[in-house]
Picture 1 (spheres, rainbow, N blue to C red):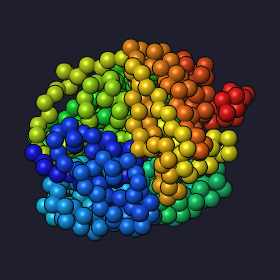
Picture 2: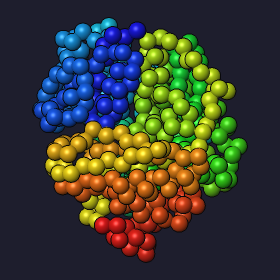
Picture 3: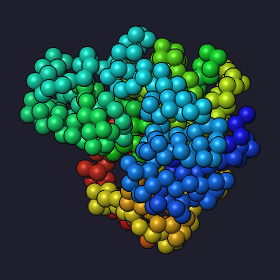
Amino acid sequence: MFEKILVANRGEIAVRIIRACKELNIRTVAVYSEADANSMHVQLADEAICIGKAPSSESYLRIDRIISAAEITDVDAIHPGYGFLSENAHFADVCENCNIRFIGPASRAMNALEDKAVSRTLAKKAGVAVPPGSEGIVDTEQGAVATAKRIGYPVMIKAVAGGGGRGMRVAHNDISLIKGYHTARSEAERAFGNSAVYIEKLIENPHHIEFQILADTRGNIIHLGERDCSIQRRNQKVVEETPSPLIENKHKDLRKKMGKAAIRIAETAGYTNAGTVEFIVDDSGNYYFLEMNKRIQVEHPITEEVTGVDLVRQQILIAMGEPLRISEKEIQFRGHAIECRINAEDPFDDFRPCPGRIEMYYPPGGRGVRLESHVYAGYVIPSHYDSMIAKLITHGRDRREAMDKMSRALGEYMITGIKTTIPFEQAILQDPNFRRGVYSTSFIEQLLGGARRELIEDKA
């Protein structure tokens, strides 16, 4: 049993990990930047150490400072959460070399899935289809044009590293391809320190569906069903739900097929701990591997709500060498769950980030409502990090009940002093196409561009 864990993250995920540790009677150490001195995770941890100035490059991305904090506090393990160093194979290696357990996959599995281009090759080896595209990294604009002509427009230019929609561009012709190629490379270099990109065929109006897996160190791998993450803005997820309306309403056979495909990819990579295998699916039920996220996901709570499995707890137990105590056959999916990401952004000003002081804060509650957040009245949101300040999750007996609870909870959620995306998400929940479960990754683009924008403005 671990006695003490360092949480190498901030915000709501740091709070989530600390809570799981407390329930396992494990002491915690929080690390924080100067900007996060008053953050909730610092207050909840048993110990806290400042590791640098506000920019993440001087704090949460500094491996040397995090390891120093771990050694000073004599921890057994480090949980990286998501983002920052969570998928950094070198960080995992450094932890192991310092006799500190990394709560996540081993570095060899990370290297097998080190970037999206390499992951495509691994998926093919596992017998899982991938969208047509380049055979690896595309180093020149001439190579990009040649690939696009071979597979046909439209195409997607993608950074091999990172996520969150950064380093991605769509091209419909040679001119937009060349411009997008250089823009994606520059953006990827700034965001991830890696400008490499690859190209794949754009599947138009697809559904973004991912499968949660757990794998222990004894060779046991299970999946815990799917999450539909198709409600996206600029390739960043806004609303997620499980089960997927597409699978439930049109392609129930896909759950078994895609679940098996996700497990094959994890097996081929020698993967352990929690991970998420992402797919795109067209209306006809054809599915293609996108990538594997080698960490806990932002949207993990909805899977916990429908399965009753505490994924963060399982991460810790697996890292301790414990075998999975639950088989795939024992997992029962109960009801429907939805998550809305609440961002400190102004939806009426092109979603401009709105850092600042929260004056009044009243969180929603009631049966079937779960809130994951690190903010409170008087908290000052820093301008240096991601704008997400909360995740609101509702669970119901069916999709309609989950949606109705979400609409009610969003209406109760009161935050003053800053702008948030709550009105925008209220509009999504009332949209007739969303209510019917008829949507794809182009949903928000259509919502913002159509007459239904009035519905959003009415919520202001």
